[in-house]
Length: 482
Picture 1: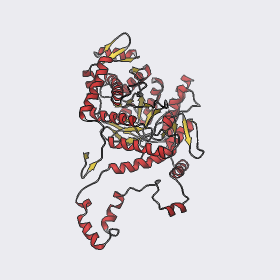
Picture 2 (picture 1 turned 90 degrees about the horizontal axis):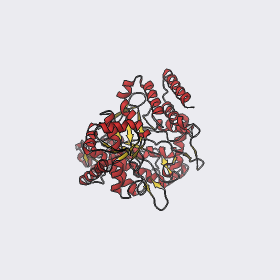
Picture 3 (picture 1 turned 90 degrees about the vertical axis):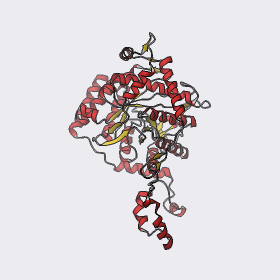
Picture 4 (picture 1 turned 60 degrees about the vertical axis):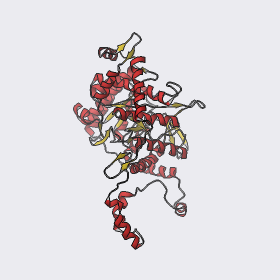
């Protein structure tokens, strides 16, 4: 439990201090004694120059002293700003933020009960919807534009998000070329490269390949971000029982070592550059061959990862709002809500994949709308219980008891709005009122709110001169690629 001014905030722990130290030591052993393969000549030279052991098989071994030095040089907090330059997130500590995920192959249409292959229109729709939802703090593409050439799809997705939401973007990129174009668009939006560094608007997502391999494109993007001061996530996705050990502790050790390998490369490139660690702790279900986002073992490994980030004082990349269900039903709401609550009370920083269904293949905007309300509710719970003379209300109890009720007492009116969280989607009506109102279930109400946002929400537009510069940047990239 963590003390607040007049009360406590709930927290969740799955590891003792001794076990955190054991996991960290095991990860250091992997880095120092086992090593990892890296397929990037510039980075290999950098590592060898810094004192790492590099052999002819492009395997790199890193001493624990070098890892500790990289951890110490990485910032403990990363401020993030929206498109308009407002400070909206501080990634670090136990602060928790929520957003969607990227590159989904399918979108679920609840009105038809069917899914369809995703396109650029799905990215535009998702960005606009998330722009309107108060508890969605950042955006990702939430779809892959399959009608576009693969070499331009990530950049087209980025432009689409920037035009349809003011919220910070976590972007994916094919390689340095389209990532450079995204950086240029960010520079246009900010006005200068110095302002991009001072007020970061985009965060790059990159990952190695488990087990223990770091491809050229991943390392190249990592180096680019370090050079530019763009915050970067380096999060492996080891699958327990497939590309990582079956045991939860071993799963976490491997993923932690893979992420810390990236941190060392990143900090050797530019000491103090902003970095987020993370692990996508997928679990291979041996009975179905599916990789579960919501198995208990996944959740325990994920929570252990968050605790390790706090142990190392590194901002972390987390998960929330996901389900293995194929449709936004009771299973989906339970699984997505449970993971979101765990992320909040564990203090995970940048939590993505809100609205994911079907093992990360399908996205549902209705689920995003539902989770916006769930996140609002759990944020209310995370505020804790203020305990002071005013809230203890001893005199109020005496006065209300003699009066026989508290409804008309001024204390009730004073504290009503601050104390009671009010839902917009969740049903608190009695049966008769619910019956008279049309007997709508949660999904029906979420679909109504979703349609209202799509029809009525107005996104703040980018200034015309900047929009023209962005389009010129896009056109230059298209000509090079297509």
